[in-house]
Picture 1 (tube, one colour):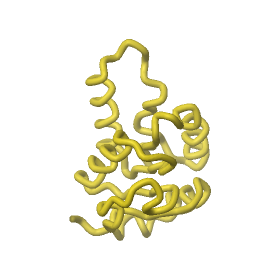
Picture 2 (cartoon, helix red, strand yellow):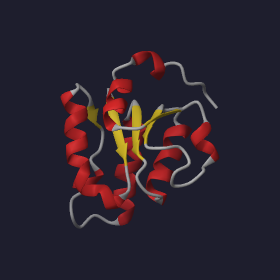
Picture 3 (cartoon, one colour):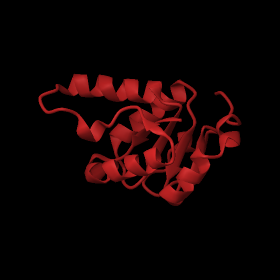
Picture 4 (cartoon, rainbow, N blue to C red):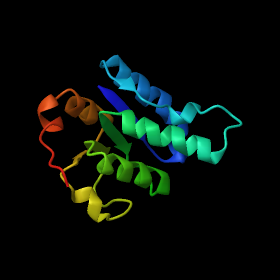
Length: 129
């Protein structure tokens, strides 16, 4: 499965390990924003992130802090009707009404997210908006 990982910039250093864990379970990462080459403009970075979400089958959100970037990535995912696995607690960093859409599956840990990723039934059961 093609996965985009959305997370706060402050957690950038944790993304390679999370990506490796997903890849070890047979998934591929569409764009590793934490490895974006130096010298790219912010616009170029945004385009790469946008296409990473668009090309993904599913988005995994590490909900560890309130950030605008991962909120936007989730909006892109919903607009393309992508399922979202959110790791954390719903309402912990913000109480966003969109988090209650059927696109979301909330889990407490990355291990649980991997279990859900490996369960195809949920991926086909979310409803379009």
